[in-house]
Image: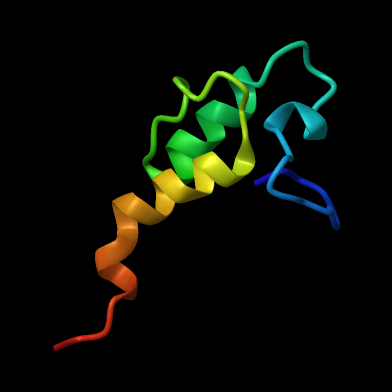
Length: 66
């Protein structure tokens, strides 16, 4: 998604850390296309917050069958 060979991402990382663009609009659009999640309201672009939203949307995919 970030189009990088590797990246160190911490809980403080932002989408803006991985783009030369003045804002994260393009990366947020890619999040929406790839994961089906609108994260445009996460103003700081915090990757941990975005991943939590992706996980919340898709939690049923990963839970074990009863």
